[in-house]
Every structure is written in C-alpha cells, then in structure tokens.
View 1 (cartoon, rainbow, N blue to C red):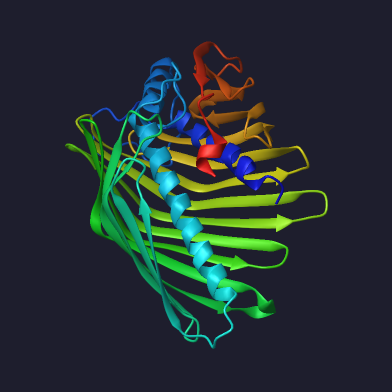
View 2: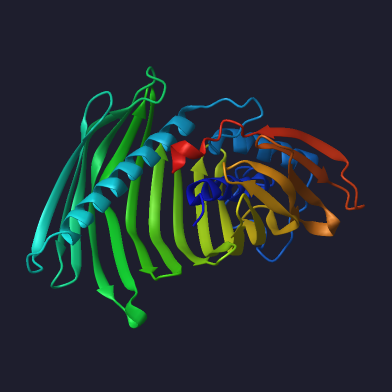
Length: 372
C-alpha cells in the first residue's frame, strides 16, 4: 500500500484523540460500578478540563504545552525495539526462504545491542515441516536514548509460540502468541513501570491483494508505583484491501476495557463496536470513526465523524471533525487545524452551539518516522 507507514501513523494519532472523551469526570474516587453503561454521560466544562488533563498525563505526542515526557520517550523506545524484532524476524525468514535444503526445524538467534548498553536477545525456532513457531525474548538492561541524554532501561522476558500454514486460495496464515514470563520493567530516571502480558494472540492472513489481522488479549497490566492499569477483554480485527486507485483499511474494536486503580479511585474505560475506516489515495487518505465509549462512573458517549478526517502521506492530520455525543444534546468536538494541532470545544447545554473552548491540543511532536 502506498506510503502505508505514514498513513498508519496518522491513523494511530487520530485513533488516540477520541481519548479526549475518556473519563468525562476523570474517575473521582468511586468504584468501577458507577453509572449504568446504558446511561449517556453529561458533558460539562469541568469534565472536558479533567479529560484534557488526563490526556496530558497519558497520551504521548500531545500536550497543551507540546512537551514530550517520560511516557513519550518510553513509547518511542518500545516501538523502536518492536521494529528491531520485526526486522530481525523478516531477515531470518528471508534467509530460510533462499535455502535449498529440505524443510527442517531451524533456530535463529539475534542479539540486539542497546545504543547505551544492554542487550535484547531473540530466539526463534521455525519447524517448516510441522508448521510451528516457538521462541523467546530476553531483555537484559537494554538501554535506548532518543536525545542522547535521557536513558531508558528495560529488563524482562517473554515467550513466543505459533504456527504458519497455507489456507484456502493459497493464502498464508500466521498465528503468534506472546506471554511475559518475567514482567518487563522500564526505568527512566526515577520513574519505573512494570508491564506483564497474558495470552496476547495475533492472527495474520496474507493474500495477493488483501491482508487480514485479528488481535486478542486476555490481560496486560502496567504498574507505576501504587497505581495500576489493566487492559483486558481486547478483541480487534483489521482488514486491508489494495485497489488500482485506492486502498482501504478497516479496524474494528469489538471490545476493549482499561481499568485504572489509582489514588483517585477505581474507574474503567470501555470501547464497544468502534470502527475506524481509512481509505488511502495517491497523496492523502480519509478516515471515519464510529462506536461507543463507556466510563464506569459517568456513563456513555457515542463517537461519530461529522467531517471525514484527512491524513497526508506524511502522517499529518489536516482537516475533519470528530464528535462525542452525550446526554441531552451535550457533545465534545475535536477538529484538526493543520500541523497536527487540534481544536477542542464543547456544547455543555445541548443548544447546538459550542459554548466552551477548551483550547488547542498540540500534537506536532508526533513523528511518523519514529513509529514505522
């Protein structure tokens, strides 16, 4: 697909922005069994302000001050490691594909050196005759530094298992599963995060003109001091179709639940039947978003696209309008205004006009090259 990495980068950025509607009230110390999921949330000035503050804390690349904090650096580091793993796996498979010997179970081991010390070792065993894959990832004080000064150190281990087979029509189907055998710790200065993953599974079917993927996750837990964030019940599918003039990507989030346990209390955020459809043209792409977001304390909002989002092949979101609709006509709007700047405004009394201007979210620090 044309410049797919930049188009997907823009998609990642816009898919993050509906988080503007998260915690319409911010989780005020109640239990996760607050307002019924069937009840629409009322959008107020206070809830929008709390949500913007939540964005500053949790979403990389975007801030009212455009400051890149520890979470941004950490995400960039994780993405860089993921890209290294992907590259090494591709090289191993290309090497095997060029071999002339009969299929056997072969082991490939790659050791990645951190740019400021430490190692990340990847061992993969592919039994071509049996159609199985197994492997492990061992992280030993792996260190990265994006700016040459701030260092991020990682430790931990994970196991990989899966299969490769040919399905109807000659398409190749790959299934990969990953679990952390030792929680991955990420340390940057005085900040330390711990990540554990249980039963993450990716299914990929590769055809001539189409690709489909499905991702499921039982549970992933991030621990930051006394705070914990649990992501679970995740079911996501992705379909890509290539055409003569344009390509299309459809991402469907059937379910996803994020539960926060912090000093502010317990609150859960849930996505249901969220659909992101991106159509890629020669120089730019358009995207629409729809679905439901539910906050356990505040209720539900429905996401819709009033004006299709336009993303350039460089990953810049240039135009469009996303809206979250709440109770009694209240709503929040996010509109791109160029250079990955986004205007946030709200209709807090349901009269059809935006009476509250929450400000401009600056996501100009978003870097497509660092993600793909």
